[in-house]
Image (cartoon, rainbow, N blue to C red; front, side, top):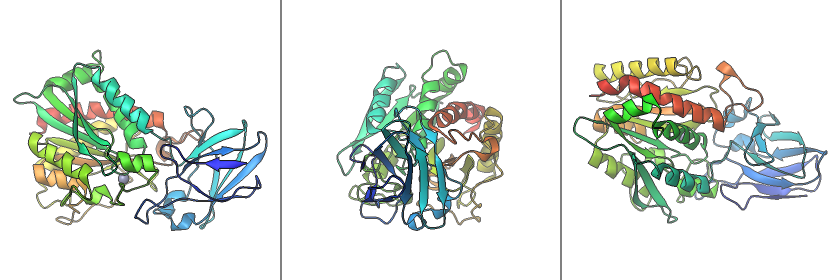
Length: 375
Ligand SMILES: [Zn+2]
């Protein structure tokens, strides 16, 4: 029996793997950081035998509440991922599964590989609507790429979508894949009307280094990019530095920053109510977008989410608050669950890659509903 994780977004440390019913594991911390929660590894063992994999010290992970009610994901073919029996005793996370084949992959959520990311960029470029631009390099030397969708023109709104500042939140890039799939479909009325009215700038992966390294939350230098938007630097957070510089060139009329939330089993958005410049105009736009998204998909809801910021108390180091404040525009953090959307639970897969894609696809209809009123 053995376990490997030396691949794209792999993360696990083996304490011991000798007995199928007592495999002991730990999750590696993000480089130069204390954050950890993302895991992704391959188990080679024996079919038809029940395996018990115990992740020790899960209670010291970044979001211990994320383990309550959580079911790990597994796959035999790396295409179809399903949930496996998982329990949390307040200290360790225990995964139990009887192998149907001799090898299996386990992960915190359906991985979105760097190769798939590169494929997505090239697939998008096949559309005449799309231009790729490399804004700069990450600390590990990867490209920071933005896709411009649509032709800039006088009077068109400028809409930015960014995803995966937190690399372990792989559902965010699945969301982008779904959104792009619709936006680049010439036969889709929503997409065609949107592209008449707006130009999109899409960053499918804000943190490719953290993604490949198997990080939960930080870049190669252990920096949480979603706390860098006030004072990004080329040395510590080039990903934010270059994207923000590009935003200053293009201006921003609407911004969605896509994430996953470890603990809350619902899709929700967080707005800019705590921003110093928050106004009736922005409040009206926020409400219109939420109403439209409720109509676009039953996967969205507004009952569960983060506590609202008090007026003037927003954390302006966070992307959505910072962009909303800087450009006086509609800006949201979009959060999807790692567990399930408890409103429409799907026990076999929980929240999944496919549902994340569909959510991204459906979100375009809500953008269309507000696009005329963004300015
Ligand atoms: Zn996040």
